[in-house]
Structure formats: structure tokens, C-alpha cells
Image (cartoon, rainbow, N blue to C red):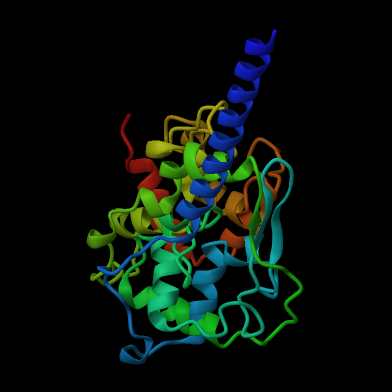
Length: 288
């Protein structure tokens, strides 16, 4: 009996040590990412237009996660993860002292100024931003009027530290993006072309819900599953006018009303006719 108790106590001690080590190791992984070799953008080297920056922030869904006034929103606030905010992006928030380099690292690379791996930032999509468009976006975000910051710092607790910091660590954009190959190029010409349509599918995050090649996402995969939006899916039965109506009103030719919480058509409704035509051409160009 005595040996059994000693063995049991030893196992408990080992388990406590392993769990504790995993907790702190996970937190360390999530808080100490060093990125030194990356293509930056200096906003003062570009002639920026705030309307263009506002447009890009809208179609890319920045205010979808960070709030209508970019005041921030709670992204995760429950067990077993802890607290993860989409922070205040105004000058009253944690980005107040961000340099252009810091903005580039956060948007394109998923890494915060202090080295935190950003677990709720879809930088994998935003890594496609051309330098000129990224300069427009950053210049716009820098001048957003201050809104009181009501959000505390990220606080990932046990077992979220192990889930996010070890088990899911490799899946975060910071660990998926080829950092040394991102940036250094201008955005494509804004025109009615497949090339510009491809660019739009990237920076607006279409692949996030509709999956690789936009042929629909496995319902069992992470994130919201979206349908096939190529010509082999339901949009293959539509005309361009139908597509425009869907993107601008959220209503399909079949009479279905799209849920803006799942399909953020209000953001896309602000796309120009040229942008929508380019997007349409891209979707119709996909051959599966």
C-alpha cells in the first residue's frame, strides 16, 4: 500500500509538472515571435487617399471584428481559452505608438508590436496586400478618431495556453506565412480582369469561408463553412446582374436572404462595379 501511494504521488507530481510546463511553454510560444527580415512599407513614400484606405478597410472586414468605429470588440471571452480581444485600432488603443513597421507586421504577418502571435487576425489573407494599398490602409487607420479603450490585454488561460500555444500553434498565420516572400510589389491595376479579381478574393478573405479554390469548405473544418461559389456551384446559374444584387443586397435570385453574420455582404456592397466585375470574372475562371 505504501509503495502504491508513493508511486501515485510521484505520478501526480510528474503530471502537475508536465501540465505546468506545457502552460508556460505555450504562453512563451504565443508571446515571443521575432520577425526581423520582412518587406516594410513607409506611408510617407506614397500619395495616399483616405477614401481609398477607408474602402480597403471596409471590404477587408477590419470593422467587422474591430467594431464600427474601430473601438474594439471581445473576440473570445470564455473557458477554456480565456480572453482574446479584437483590440481598439484608434489612437486611444494599443496601436497608439505603432510605427509603419509595426502596422505591417500586424496586418501582413500576424505579429503584434510586442511579439505576440495574433491568434484572431487573418493575416494569411492580408499578406497579399500590395505595398501601395497597404500604405493606403495604414494611413487611414492612423487617423481614425480616438474612441475610449474599454478592453483589457489578452489573457490566455489554462488550458487555452496549451491549445493555442502548442496544439494549434503551427496553424496561426504567423507560422503559415512565408514572411521573406511577402510584400515588395504593388497591387494589380484596378480593372475588370481575372488578375484583379484574384487579388480581391485574397484581401477580402473569400478563402476563409469558401475554402481552397473557392469550391466550398468542409463543414467539419475550422471556421464558418461556405458553399461553392465558382461556376460549378449555385452562382453558375446566375448572370452578372444577379451576382451584383447578391453582393449589394444580400438576396439571391432564388429568394434566399444571406445572413450578414456569416456572409458579410454589407462590407462587399461598397465594392465598385469594376471590383465586382473583376471578382465575377475570377469566380467564373476557376475550373475544377
